Image (cartoon, rainbow, N blue to C red):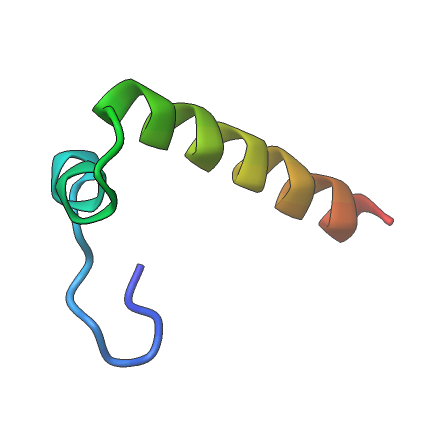
Length: 42
């Protein structure tokens, strides 16, 4: 997705920017998607 006019970044790019592992970025992404899906259902 393109939020705020920024080019989408890969999990590896985000991990490098934040100094965390790609797998941790993946876990954060999964939780965020679950929360969004829950909000949509309500």
